[in-house]
Image (cartoon, rainbow, N blue to C red; front, side, top):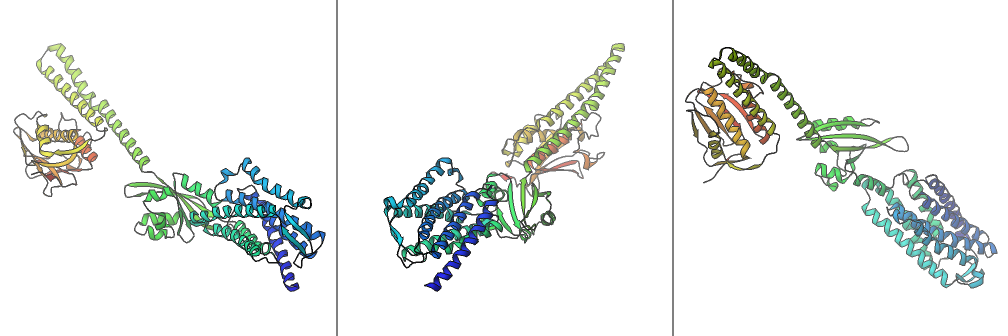
Amino acid sequence: MVGWLGIYQVGLVVSSVVSGLSAAIAWRNRGARGGVALAITLGAHATWAVSTLVGTLAPGTEIAVVTSKIVITAVVVLTAAFFVFALQYTGHESYVRRETLALLAIEPVATTALIWTNEAHGLMYVALEPGSTGASGLTKNYGPAFIAHTVYSYSLLVIAIFLVVIFVFRSRYMYKRQVAAVSFATFVPLTANAVSLALHLQLDLTPIVFTVTGVAFTWAVAREGLLNVTPIATEIILDDIDTGVIVVDTGDRVVDINDSASELFDVSKEGVIGASIPELVSERPTLKTAYEAVTAGRTSESWESQVDDRYFRAQSSPLIDRRDEVVGYALLVVDLTEQRERELELERRNEQLDRFAGVVSHDLRNPLQVASGRLELARRDGKAEHFEAIERSHERMERLIEDLLSLARLDEGLDVERVDNGEVAESAWTHVDTADSTLVVSVDELFLDADRDRLSQLFENLFRNSVEHGGDGVTVSVESLPDGRGFAVSDDGPGFVDADVDAVFDDGYTTSRDGTGFGLSIVAEIADQHGWSVEAIDADAGARIEVTTGEKMAMVN
């Protein structure tokens, strides 16, 4: 027994020192969540170990009796403090209010009062006196209050452990080691205490085994930043923000990803965590190069990139540990697609306003000047030719205004439906002054998805262009493309003899003195809104405009 007692006492010395150092480290971090509770827990254990050690050095004396009471006092403080730490560490700090702390203080205060007044009532110990051959040399017969205290303490510890265990399973990958240390530090002393009580061991293993707890907590605080940012705090930060967050280590492996990033890239956390970023973006060299550039140093970097039809901005922040070494990077990713689309739309509108301003300042001014000059001449001599010129100027101004209004209305959204291409073409023909021209439609009962009014306007402008440039008696044809993925409008006129085929869809381009230069521009705009493309072809006989819709037009029998 003497040999084992010596080993036991050495263990108590080690346990006291380790717990004391751990308490000091935790106290330096007392401003962090759970810091005070952890410091009190470890300090209470250091007191427990020192008191037990003193009791073994003076067995069977009044000193042993006093130290035995100090042990109970330290245990009740340790139990309550650890319960508070578990609440704060696992994200239940909302329960740590004054009312809760007051309730938790009732049992430690009552137990402490009972233990120090035990001689008057014997509720804690029926007998606590010299006479045993144990390490403290005391005979201990437990009373009802001690049993109640034991049940209460174990209940509180079980709840705390349950909270920690549940938290282990929902802990983020990057904090697995930290949470594992806390769990291990929690289980070991409780198990040792249960074994000591169950087997009625003369040497209580709990204060010795608590050395493991002290070491685990010291490691977790010093190396894993236990009290700097707790896992639950990081979880709140990562999961409650709309910005996508991806955490990578220095080996370019994904160690964490929040819900926003998962939704942004349409990936599952389980499928991405642990994966290599270079491998994930291996088929996108631009992204790979950008990632390597922003994770190559110790400063925050940002970059923007387009992936398919989406735009992203990412900012990297290096993660630096206590040794001033980069251990990874946090990548904040924002989807800029909607913003970029708004910017492009605003840019397009500004360009449109510039075009409108040009038309108003130049194209409308010319016919106005002509009309004003002719009106002055008409006042002098009253010849009919002046009035005819004024009428032509007014007609040109009216067409310019109509085209400008058409362009402005194109900003309105599309009302897409399944339409009969041939039927829309024939209807559009009736809205155009075609004189003695002829329409031939060979796309009967061919359907495509389009806005009926916009498609009609497209046909009207194409028909008007053919009639105006094709000459008297021109024949206009509407037919489907050979592959069925679009249609064409052609005529048997002279074609684009004096026109630049590559420029006919530009705003203001015209080869006619009376033309507005917006007819085919509107056609191109309508096609673009639908996701179609247009092409002008100078055919062997006449002009031809092909509209490629991309979808194969359906035939209804």
